[in-house]
Amino acid sequence: MIITLTDGADPVDVRAALTDLGLWVHEFSGERGTTQFLVRPYSGHVDRADLLSLAGVADVSQPASVHPLVDAQPSTVRVGPARIGADAAPVLMAGPCSVESEDQIHTVARRLADIGAAFLRGGAFKPRTSPYDFQGMGGEALGWLRDAADEHGLQVVTEAMSESSMTEVAEVADLVQIGSRNMHSTPLLRAAGRTGRPVLLKRGMAATVDEWLAAGEYCLDAGAPVVVFCERGIRSFDDRTRNLLDLASVALLRHVYGHPVIVDPSHALGRRDLVLPLGRAAIAAGAAGLLIEVHPQPGAALSDGPQAVSFEVAAELAGSMRADRPAMLAGES
Ligand code: PEP
Ligand code: MN
Image (cartoon, rainbow, N blue to C red; front, side):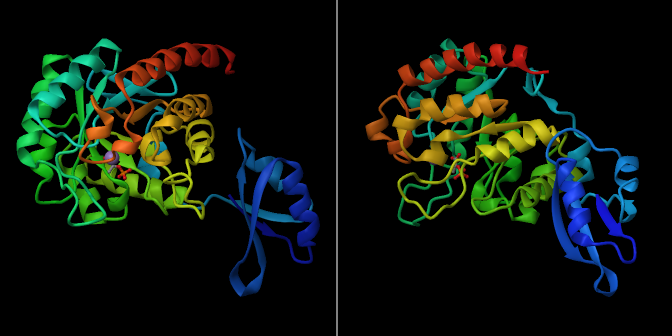
């Protein structure tokens, strides 16, 4: 909401009164240099009438949201038979970074079905930093992924990297993944939306929460039935972990804005030893599920081996997700 002050009001006093109401307050210069405040509740709801009754407040207006469709999306969404969001049990999406062979993806699918995963992940087209790194098996891998998922009652989540391969990807994906590097690619976001498939939208590694939500708006505006957000770590100054897992954004999306958000601790941490504790922390923060990288032989993975967990760790995480979450749901008001 935007607060306009009365002539002669002391901005310091008005700011203090707004802060007392539990509002986050951002000061900016309005028309003709007058002081205005952009305010947002930290949580819950503040009545416009309460704000208007404060001394020094002349007007309270609601700026038009830049992502009205995202705002209108329910906090729990449906992707095929799965429900993802605040009112659903946490979902597990898991699989290798890259689909490497037909055998590999069938083995992974079988093991993941055994531990109750809902989605099989695996990249056929890989966004790699170096052009000399393994780029994925391409279209052929999409068919292997679909067959393996079908055989074991799983759904498919896989990344589309280009507009030209979007149709091919959307034909096999129950959830079309837009990767971190492409979150800002508005033509790709629109192309994903036009397929009519649900979209898993990873957060750009240097994207603000508002940019991330606005990227979701592109998908919904172009025709996506739902957008599920995925926090996968943002760039920080510290290189001890691959990225910085921003659990604050997860809590914001879940508890303040009411959007379905899942967490990818694998790309956030870049190291397998921390996937279990941070996966649990993500669920505690409000994540509707996890996306993790699992490999039958993590040491031999063609991409992202250091962050791939074994089936045993994936099973432990699946078990603790279910054990932790109902207790939290019961404790939530
Ligand atoms: C992935 O999930 O395979 C991937 C490349 O992730 P991100 O876009 O988050 O780096
Ligand atoms: Mn990966």
